[in-house]
Length: 448
RNA sequence: GCGGAAGUAGCUCAGUUGGUUAGAGCGCUGGAUUGUGGCUCCGGAGGCCGUGGGUUCAAGUCCCAUCUUUCGCCCCA
Image (cartoon, rainbow, N blue to C red; front, side, top):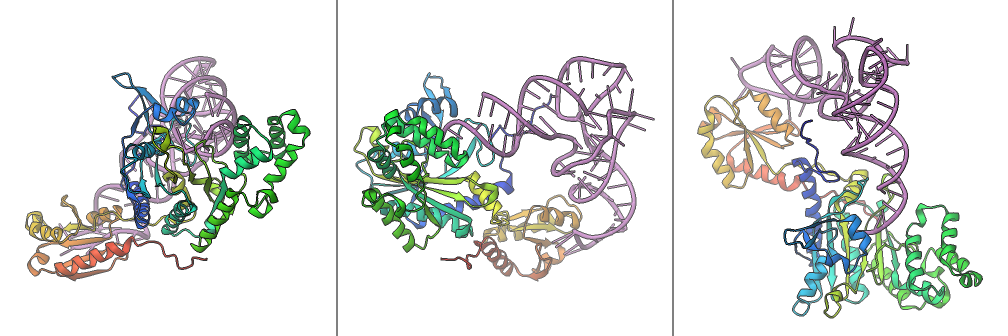
């Protein structure tokens, strides 16, 4: 049996055309994050297992992470998410950081599970977090950042929906309103999280099973089912209309309207399976039928930094995975053709031109042109074919005639046109094309 | 971890109730075309039929296992 050429299960090789696409996606993320004042950070891919045990459950760490003993018999985890890491970093410098602290990173993360569409074992995830702001403005800002990133790819509002809910609200409803204890709340949260995947009758049966006999007798199941029918904040019972969590959601919605983000929706069934969320949560859904699932999400988690023994820091953030994002862009026809970084392919004409061309090549490179030279001595059609196959935009012909005249033939490989110019002119044409060529998709048709 | 589906050329796939040396299109490659890709024509290479067992005179085809991909479940960072 021969050695396999396949990449490790659930992980991907990035050939140049794949890497170009990834670079394109990441560059938009960086551009938008930095426009909002977020600064990039990074951290080791390995973390001690304790970091995750503190906030996750044992089962998740054991079953769904890459975990091993190092030579010093420490138990080490390949990071499955970035949130504990960034919380650790902030906690370590709790006193000296300038708040609000805006941070972003695009780490690769590993989780041990069966790969499926939109979920691989290794993925890259943009993490955007703002530390030290307690008000709704922080929740608003991260949602706007997420929205702006999607728009930077040319996405329109109809392509995705931003679902909003509040853990504080659900806590209030489950606790004061339904009288559930903490165990019941957690079980119910997990159940509601799956409500869209199951038949209603099965849901009601399982919800009923969570309740105690006395809660049943008090008709709490019907109360719960009634609450879950709420389509908007106004549908909630009048006694919670002035609860702080509802006021927060209203405030947030008002801010989103002012930011011209209109494709949001209050969704009382939105839970996000985490214990660490403390207030507003949001999730961005891909509306394309091929990806009928959550694309990414986030929310407020005020308790994590405090786990490191320092004063808690109010935090809101989100994580945007590259796999679901790429599915989104593909399905909606938003993937641009990204050309290589190489500006032009140098086609050498005739024998022994390579050496004579060196001065010209050096000059072009000095002026900032990225050149790949065909050193094979093959016929011109082969050289051109290679350039086309590489996805390059230009070929520059260099032969005896060009070298003596100083006029070089520049062939546009996209439309086949050809013209002769001096070096300066070639440089400006080629660099101009590089700038325009990867310009963002136009967003002229954006609705409000 | 559990269940369904699928693996034949680089890619997309055909291959009859099991029957000689395994097929197409596209792609690749050489030529027609000695300073020019995409069109046209002619030639060529390329397959342990995912892998390992089994049934049979005979297996791409039937059976089992395994690996990979994929859809769902569990879980969701």
